[in-house]
Length: 121
Ligand SMILES: [Zn+2]
Image (tube, rainbow, N blue to C red):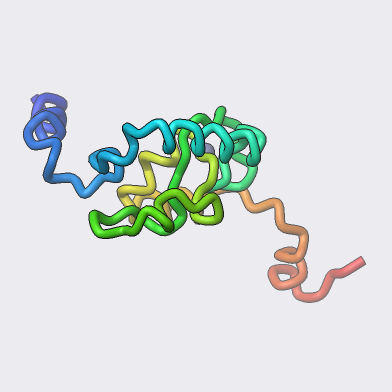
């Protein structure tokens, strides 16, 4: 049925997705070590969606990985952040990710000012 069709889309060609997981540098010792450093630095908290309570055990590149990305950038802690698996995967589907960001509860107090027209305290 429909479920079946959905699945086959992902079974087919793993190489067709420009996913960062295909980069061979993910299999190096250097990466494994750096990844742990970043996760510890970010206290195992997901940095993609503020307030996310899932355990962050994935290291995400802020600037997306490309085949010709130099090692200096690939292994740059400033270009890395902790992410939960959920949001790290979502990021590949930008539209879905942005929709989730927009729908996320925004506990920003300054928003009240604009919405309710200067009911400040
Ligand atoms: Zn998350």
